[in-house]
Length: 244
Length: 252
Image (spheres, chains in turn cyan, orange):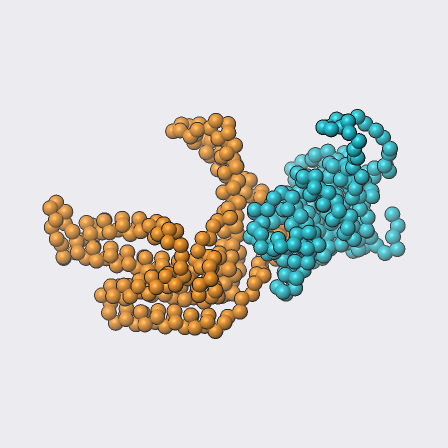
C-alpha cells in the first residue's frame, strides 16, 4: 500500500514467540493501516490477541519495528504516544472496568490525559450519550449486564479520542439486539478499526478488508465470494433475511 | 462490591469533607486511646455518642457493629478482674476479684466504644474511595493510598473468583469433611483463586496503563473546603485539646 503521508500504523517484520518456547507464534508480520476497517480471523491460539498486545506495547516483539505515523516506536515515550492514538477493547469487559461507577470509569482515561475534572466529566457524559448510554453515569459497573459492560468499555476507550480501535472479539456473548447496536455504532464512527472475531457476519457488516493469521503469518483474504450453504434454524420455512 | 452501609446520607458528617473527618477523627481517637483518666474517657465516650447520634445510622446495623467489637471487651471484662492482681482484692467464694483489673477492663471498654463511635460517625460516613483520596490530599504516600483503594476494589473480585470455584466444586458433589480429600480440595481452591486473581490483576493493570495510568489516581470530584468544614475541624480539635488537657491534669 502506498500513502503520500506515512500510514497511522505500520508493522515491519514483526516476529514473536512466547517466552520459553522455540516455535514462533508470529513470523515476519508486515501490515499497515491508515483509515481502513480491517477484520482479523483465525483459529484459537493462533496469535491474534498477541498481535494486538504487541501493537499496544504490552508485549515486546522478538524482532521487527512498529511505526506510528512513520516514526519507530521504541522508547516508553513513543509507546505512551501510541497508546493515546490507539484504543484497545479487551475481550473480557470485566478486565477493563475497575472503577465503582460508570462515570468514574469512563473519565479515568481523560483524567490521565490531563483534562480537568470538569472537562473529563463533560467528555465522558458526551461519549456515553453518543453510545446511547444516557443516564448510565451513576450505575455501578459491576451490576451492568454483559452487553452494557461491553458498550461502557467501548465508551471508556472512545472518551480518549483514539484514531484507531483494536477490538478483540467484540461480538462475543452479545444478544442479537446488542450485537446489532454495536454494528451500528462501529459503522457510525469515523474511525479506523481492526476487529478480531470468529463471527463472519459481524465482520462482513463492519469491515472492508479481511486478514487471517495462518501458521504465524498474516494473509489477506480474497474479496467476498458469492456462495451458498445449507443451514437449519427454527421457522426456516418462512421467508427471512440473513446478515447484511 | 463491599457494602458501605453508613456512607450514604445527608447529615452534617455525610456532607463534610473527608479530610476534615480524617484529621478530627484521628486526633480525637488518639486522645481517647492514650488517656488513663476515667472521667476523660467517659466524657469522650459521651461526646462520640453524640457524634454518632448526629450521623443518624440505621439502628440495627450499628448494634451489630457494636456487638462485634464488644465481644473483645467482654472477654477482657471477664478475664482481667480474675488475672490482674494488685492490692484491692475482693474474695468472692472461690474467686479473687481484682478491683484494679475491673477498673482497667471498664476503662478499656469505654475507650474502645468511644473510638468505635468516633470512627463510625466520622469515617464510616465517607466512602472508602473518598477517604483514600482525602488521605492522598493529606500528603500520605501515593503508593499506600493506591494500595488501599485497590485492595478495597480487588478484595471483592478475589472473593467472587473464590465463590465461583467453590460453586463449581459444590456442583460436583463436594461436601467438606475432616478428610485429606477436603484439605487437598481447599488447598487447590485457594491456589487457583490466587493464580486467577493474579492473572486478572495483570489484565486490569494492562487496561489501566493503556488508558494512560501512571501511578496516580485522579479523583473526578475535587471537593473544596467550605466554612462548615473549617468549623467542624475547629470544634473537633478544640474538644480533643480540652480532653487532652484534662487527661494530663487528672491522670487517674
